[in-house]
Length: 247
Ligand SMILES: Nc1ncnc2c1ncn2[C@@H]1O[C@H](COP(=O)(O)OP(=O)(O)OP(=O)(O)O)[C@@H](O)[C@H]1O
Image (cartoon, rainbow, N blue to C red; front, side):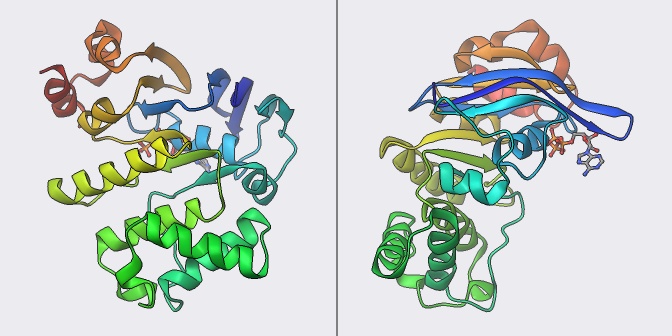
């Protein structure tokens, strides 16, 4: 087991956003995470990555209790993540952004950190843009850089939070191919995305969250055919994806 959430609870004031959520992720899985707006998907990523703390429950990575680790410690332990809105240092080049991630995210130094940065830039298809300032990159390049920064930390588990937002269909396909390549290289992937058909085509497991609880978990086709899942999404922005995925 690579990741285990054991009855994790997260409250904001009086509001329980995640009530006693348990989830297990095996090494090598590619899991899509879906759910209505406000279901607690990003909060769950926060509990895994350490940017949010559990009010109760625990988080295990590869058998190690990382519940008390902060975000930087969890990153060095092997949990990488991207954010809904890419957050590069716009005044630094793409390569420098990857180098900062490699240095602070993986604990590598000197030549090893430089090599990890070069590697991440190449793997994410940014060789031609390595020397460009991040602030001048196209949206697709910024998404690639978001992935490169995460990969530069040498994660075993990669959390992708709506990384495809704002892309055209053709750009989305390019990003999807890149994410599949990263997974095939041995990185376990947990991916939140509203574009359900993309998840169904790539993931081998789909987890559906609603009100901070897992309401369905299984192979993508069965999950998409599940009556509770369909009822939960009826009339929501994800409905189109469900119809698409069912064909
Ligand atoms: N820092 C915070 N303070 C207070 N409430 C918060 C905070 N972060 C999230 N919430 C609330 O927690 C609930 C879950 O939010 P979260 O962003 O995890 O949902 P989500 O499933 O990722 O939604 P979306 O698909 O819209 O991104 C929402 O009701 C949200 O308003």
